[in-house]
Image 1 (cartoon, rainbow, N blue to C red):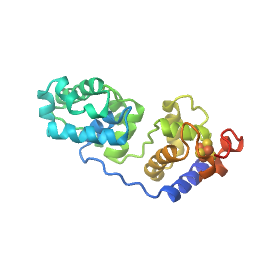
Image 2: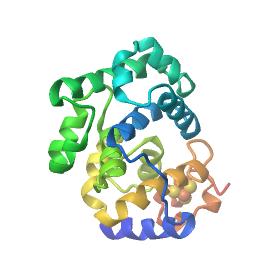
Image 3: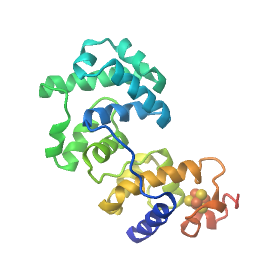
Image 4: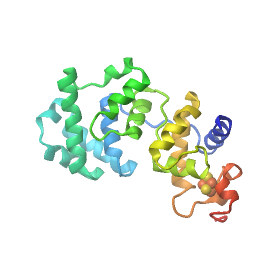
Length: 222
Ligand code: SF4
């Protein structure tokens, strides 16, 4: 299966190129961005993050603010009444446990310990934790979102794909560390552009030859 994944990763890279999005340098900013990305578009996430940083240039200011003030600053990202208390609770926990507002200590932990710590924070599940590990610390942990779950399921790359969490756990040991970053981002791009949830564009797909769903003719040749 690793070989098939390498082949698919190469085809996607050939199609979408190298992915180098710009992420904040501070791992806690990456965490906030990850919380803001839940159930919204990248554009709304980025707008909410910029507004949040304008309102709260430091995490001391977040601690001094009410949940409502934080929620107002991230309103453009959606679900602000749920996301604001989560962000505040995470900052408060770091302050209480570590005496500062930094996730830097995770850099000295191994992957499993760091993932476990991140998932103990409110609102941080396996996908968000993996995103923080990948984008803030450069660790080769493979996050699986709904796009990736859908594409990988159609390609039948994992045996148990009943949930994105199970797909993530099954896929992690199969993806070579050096492929994780581009493969993750290119699969998302492929899911958005071609292997869409409704009416996937199989006729335009660079993975047609690797796709059992396409061979079954499930989606015709749109
Ligand atoms: S052939 Fe169709 S179902 Fe298979 S990966 Fe491509 S777009 Fe998705």
